[in-house]
Image (cartoon, rainbow, N blue to C red; front, side, top):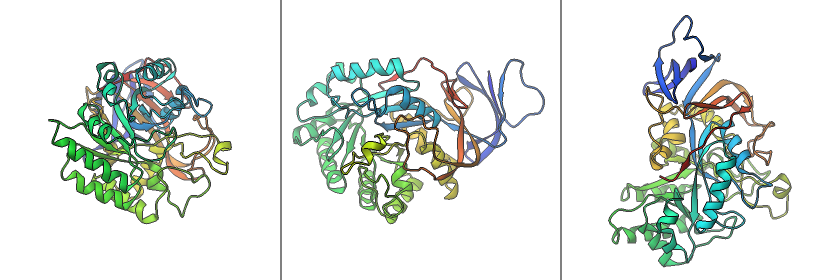
Length: 406
């Protein structure tokens, strides 16, 4: 049994101090802080200033293995996830050899089952010619969603076929789209509208990494028509912009203006933006210093502590933080109710409040962060996945992971 004593827990009324008991993979008791001894044999964690939230679920990760595992692999990425308070990740298909068919999915699943320390799901990439195969059972049983690239990205997976962009909405798994901006967003919404007239139930349309005020306005309008439309923003598009970050500035979409960042925060606060997706995209420092560097930032290791700090500074409710980093993605992928309540499966992260600074000791193989030197009010003490302590004080415990296809 694990007992976390006198920790702040997010409730409807805000942060409240509780004792949290975990046994048999589930929350057994959540009670006001007690005095005296606990049950003999229990592991007791009692930080001076502990904050316990449901562990994050990251729907947008680039693990890089197979093909680019010198940048990141399944072990290093999953360790970075756990250190960042993330219990499940969903891996994008733009590997060195793009994952567009069953063979690539089977290869990646085998590697991840052997090396990952977190639960995981996989996406398949849409191409101009594979939409019929994606609909087949052999692919559907291996994927958590379909990824469409409508603009430049690592891997060169542009989709130009109108037929493919329409027919992909004839299968049930979420369709995630790298739109490249407002023009691509309008184009995919056109095909989504057209598909609505042809199929009974549309799959979720998931717009990745919003970066501008214009895109947010388009999403707000489209959500009035489509309840199945969802949107994501990255921590770097919320916390960085063109005027405050230049060092390794190559990222897609590009960093926006300060006004864009403020509008995106408004979208998070109102719930127009559903998910945090880190778009964790590690490249080596050597590559990022080249004249034409690859696009992408590592982010999975720092996202939740930084967002904990930012939400507090903006006085946004803890319930919004939990929905943004965990609950909305859990609903999308049918992972069950992750809230800290008796009988629920226990996947959570315990933070210590204090004064910390991003930098050094990275678990990600690329060993850098665009947030180097940024101050944060929280650091991860331990991460629990389905009742198992898999990260604590810099140490990791291997356990059987779950392959997610729902």
